[in-house]
Structures are given as C-alpha cells and as structure tokens.
Figure 1: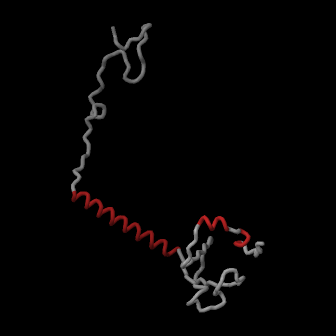
Figure 2: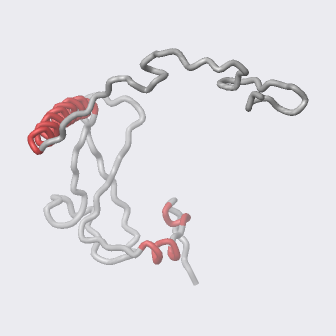
Figure 3: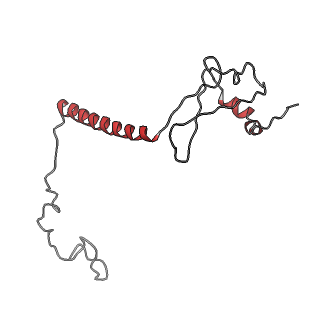
Length: 147
C-alpha cells in the first residue's frame, strides 16, 4: 500500500506529493551542490577593505561638499555687543523695548526659499523652562504687560 494514499482512495496533490516515486532531477540547484564563494578573511583583507571604503567615502564626501558650497551662501553679521561697530543694537538689560534694524546685503541672486539662521553665544536655556514661559504673542512682536 502506498504511504501517500489517503483514506477513500485519494492521492495527494501538490509539489512533491505525487503517487509516483520519481527522484528529483540531477541538477546542481536542486541538489544544493552550487559552488559558493567563501572568502578567506584575514587581517590584510580587512585592512584593505577599510582603506578602500575610506577612500571611496572621502571622494564622495568631497564631491558632495563642493556641490553644496556652490549652492549655499553664508554671511555672518554681528549686530550687537562688543565688536559690532554699532551701538544701536546693544542690549544692556532685559525688556528694554529697543527696536533694531539690521541690513544684510547679498552680492549675488538667491533662489527661493531663502533661510536665515542666527547664532547665540554664551546663552544657556533650560528647554522645560522655555516651554513653560513661551509667549507666542511676544514672539510675534505684540508687547503685552503681565499683571
């Protein structure tokens, strides 16, 4: 009696479940006899791989930086404090109510969008205190007296 035969005389169907007992064809893929590449990992191979990867990374980084330098315009303007040359924007104490206009001239045309960033020195802020004391109206320029 065939071990694949079920009750009722049915024969199983599907891949690998046939009633005939044919062995799979003698192919290297089906017999898992495909030759494989097994590199010998030595100290010299690892060092050479890291060196080649490093040289490629440096080349790609240098190319990306040179492309970015052509597209980025950067200019630093000090508008307050010592060394600024203008006393109009010096702030001596908090909440002075002083208005300061700063003009920055670019020597070439810039495509939109234009982003302006600023840098603060010697300024340390606790983020939780900042969120607790955040006043959107003050940031929008509306001067409100708290009382």
